[in-house]
Structures are given as C-alpha cells and as structure tokens.
Length: 113
Image (tube, rainbow, N blue to C red; front, side, top):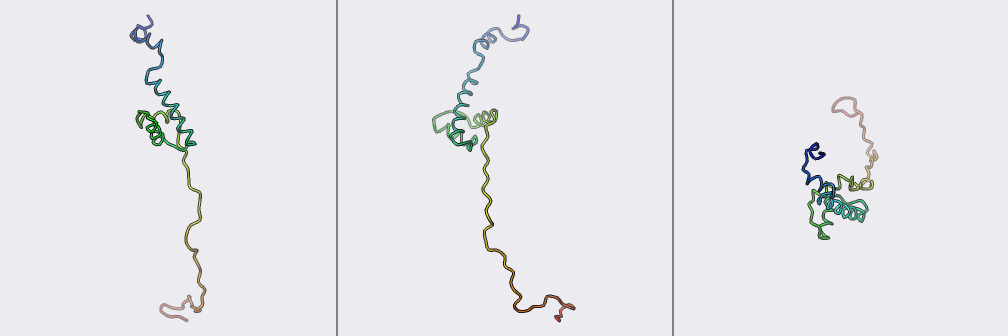
C-alpha cells in the first residue's frame, strides 16, 4: 500500500530500507575522510587542486571536480594567505637646496627680476 502511495517499486523500497546509503554515498564518505586528512596535514592551506594531487599520489582514483564538490559541500576551504606589508623599495625623495639662489617668482612673462 505504501509503495503504491509513494509511487515507487516495492523492490526499490526494500533495497533502500536495508541499505539506506548508496554505493556512491559510501564511497564519498570514505573519500571525504581522505580529503580531511590531506587538508589537516597541510594545516588548512591546500585547496581542492592540491588535495586532488595528494589523493592521486596515494593511488586514489577520483575526479578533480568530485573533490571540489565534496570540499564545497562540507565547507572545507583553503586558507587565503596574504604577504606581510613591506616598505616600498627604492630611495627616498630628496628636496635639493637652492644653492644657486634661483628666483622662482617672476614679474612678467620671459623676464626675471
């Protein structure tokens, strides 16, 4: 009766009843544990691409987008670091002394004093 109301196959309902998680969901949970381990070893610095590289190094077969999707779904983000502020390199500007006693005020155009 319940299967008819929900419009699902009886075999599918009993399959779900005995095994509520699909094979992919179980594999995603296992993969999420590996992702969290790699993320923790990097002290929260690695993003999805580097975590994907770590998983490939240990022989895990998964896609880069799958890793990114799992990290995004579980709010695992790379720490964005910024460089420390540094002084601007180069020489400081120097104001030259008026040693030639130049006059910068003029009375008329093209005439000095």
